[in-house]
Image 1 (cartoon, rainbow, N blue to C red):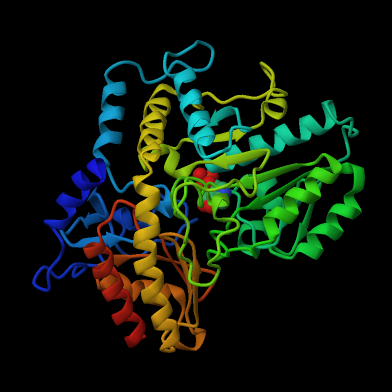
Image 2 (image 1 turned 90 degrees about the horizontal axis):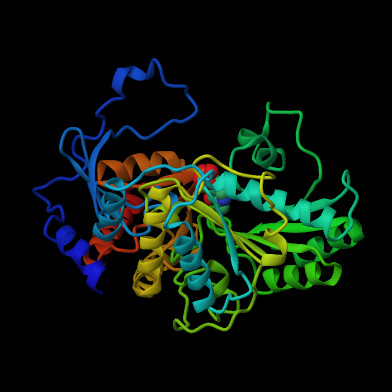
Length: 451
Ligand code: PLP
């Protein structure tokens, strides 16, 4: 594990000891008292100054294990040496060309991402379209699906249905929040984009009924392979295969959003490679690297970890016959596929091609899920689920909120994030060590017992 070791060696030498008292100075206050910053976030009371690997240091010098990892953007840890080197090399050459001109790493980046997919058996996804944020990638996928429906399948320009799932989180643009079922994300931003039908996530019969109702006007089914923001919700084993079959019957597209779940997080390069895995309860993938492709989407959205936690880098990976409808001038982005993004994106693909991080997610995930399941069995947690090194943990709401739990964790030197009241997410960097992970889980366990 060459590149992984180089990070973890650094981390190991700096594991906080009892004397080191990580998190002891939590409460380092918001700079400027928040007077000039719009209040659309309510961060925990810690101000981070530096970071390396799995660890961050606050402005007062206290250290914390980062168990959120930028919502999976930091799958390779903070400032991974290979990614930083790729960035620095590119910084010395050219940082922005715009797509008005060609750039030497543009095609190699596209080739690399397509080759990564092909190596996993997803050779059907032979084209990519680079964007920046996750929301832009999902918007791009929806635009491509609609245009394909109108220009290739003959669906009328003002018709067409996209089926989405209850509890979805695909980003914050006006269209994406139009079909969000989270009142905080949705309310107050109307008028909303039409053309979306929401069904309960994981319910095959409801999905089939909506597909039947849409009939010939079904453009696409858009789903998170595993729902992240909803609390790491893994759908039943037959759900994504059923979605694939339902789309195939009418020529509609299956779009899988792997922005949070993809690129190693769940133990495989793509989260949809977990489909068909024997183990559904404990969240530990049982397979090896070699996976038969159970479900291949027509379009897949990637982001977060694609930029290595360094830059916003996203992409739609998809079938040529679909993505080729995005002809010159019909879609674009000033920064999409910029030189820095290409350089970092290629370096990220190189890391993933080794398989080390996917394997680490499976092995470390086994440790994490085993310990969490044991806390569930002891009645300290209501439930825990997930895949690979990713867990959604339900607390007993009577004992306190997820936010309060995360504040307790912070004071023990662990950064984590709550979601939807009483759920806490853990998504440590895949580059972490068993020792560091167990240390974090010790803090989690102590917090759960005291909560
Ligand atoms: N899709 C999924 C599944 C996500 O989890 C997120 C962000 O959390 C997004 C899309 C949006 O990504 P971004 O915040 O980069 O726009």
